[in-house]
Amino acid sequence: MKVLIVDDDKVIRDYLIEIIENMGHSVIAVSNGYEAIDHIRQHGVNLAYIDINMPGIDGLQTLTRMRQIDPKVSAVMITGDDLERLEKGPLQKGVYVGLTKPFTEAQIKEINDAYENIKGPLEFVYDNPNALDREKMYGANILVADDEKNILDIIVNALDSDGFCNVDTVLNGEEAIESFNKKKHDLIITDIVMPKVTGMEILRHVKAISNSSQVIIITANANKDTAIAAVRLGAYDYIEKPFDLDTLQRITKMAIERKLLIDRTDSIP
Image 1 (spheres, rainbow, N blue to C red):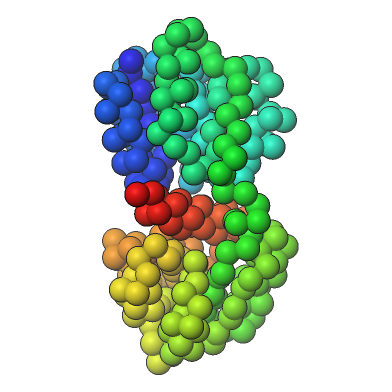
Image 2: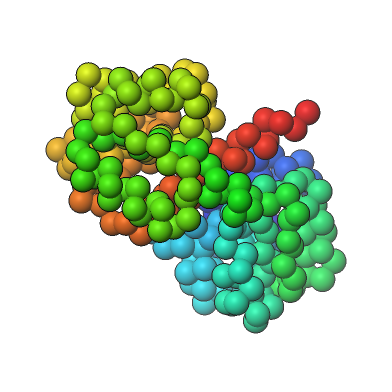
């Protein structure tokens, strides 16, 4: 069976590649919807695992375009907390499975076996009792560091309106490091240019102490190259000023999903 994995998170891609290849299937992995569409134009795919939350075109848009090219392709939509969206949306048409994070090898095997048995579109929602539920997601500890109080207020209000309830704020890099040392936050959102200690120094400190903690860099256009360098050093992503609040909320959810998934994977013996 030919399997396509579409996910912007390398941790998820590598996890699925290992599981599915060990089952004896042929696997190709890409990091976004555009690459998935290009791949399916040129190669046949039996089953695709697609993350619903991706930059650019999201998973549902990707699946729609893929099925325009090849109506026979079956897909498993991967989601952290959007199962309700799947149930109310195209899932009602019975064309794919909804799989919630974090998933297990046994669940992947069950889905692959089901597809091979019927050789056609799968028609059920796989509700994972160990999924990243709303309590875990929105109860994550977040630290926001920026020397501009108005920016802090904008970010905190955006996170609060999205349901995040544990958000700490600091006005400089020294306070950020001091706060992180005490609480070991799940996610740090930091401006790259800060007095006393820079965002890059915060990133290095966080990753040295807690590699699973995620860091989002806030940058002005003039510092974009530095922000890209930060991602190479381990930051989850960067956001350019002036930033869109929907983008901030989406990337925050994705970063926390990654943190919780890494924690769960690390806890497996």
